[in-house]
Image (cartoon, rainbow, N blue to C red; front, side, top):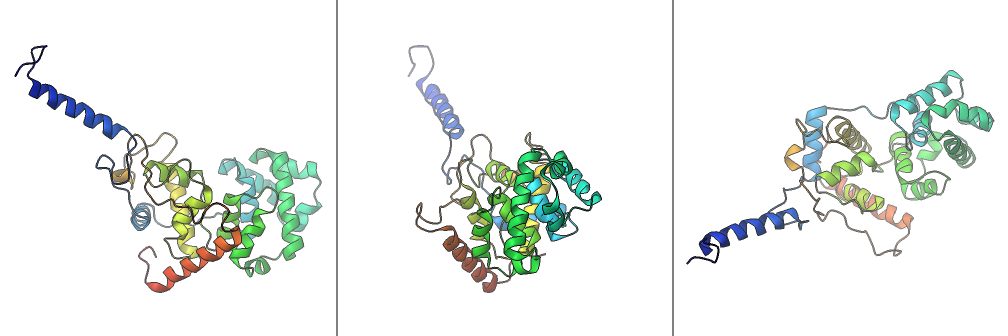
Length: 295
């Protein structure tokens, strides 16, 4: 049968089906859509990254207090600039809680200026050090003895300490199993269909803490591997050639794989109760089996 333009209707129907199919694949897909690539699980991601990059030995610091200081100074800053600011504090012999509190505002600002936003960061650093010395007498050991479920909400009440900074301090300075979600982690997860841009910090963090044993070494290495991947391949302009996760890159729109779930309805639990629940889940995972992510 011939249509009004001289083409057979069978051919027109075939072309229409192809066009419609490409249009559907270009739209945001459901997690089970055949148009989206499969997303890796957390075990696969870790093992691929560890095989490609090896141990990262992160965070680079001589003391836990240096980690704490760096976690505050690295807010909205490139790490080389933070290293310059920390080097200034070391040269001036001011990288201790007591020495920082003794500095004038102007002198502290001058020393940390390379990290950027130095006036804001000077206030934040001083607020944290004041809390650290008042609450724990400047003792890392005393702070480490505080249960994570109480310590994290306590840190978040300190001026200038947000979730990422708090988790960096907990994981890298205090050896507490609190997974760090930074811009690098979000970028990688979004590009590989494991989260969405609108996901809240604690929802993304729960993806890892609900599914991994709460082991400091594992959380430390996992986050450090994300940092390495983001600096080598998953840059703002991605370099996918040779990337360990290139087989899982989601093209076009990023489909919301159902890993992100709110732990409870808004306001149903406070932060401390959430921490207790996450800790219990992590302990059960740790005790239930040998975990394949350990190296």
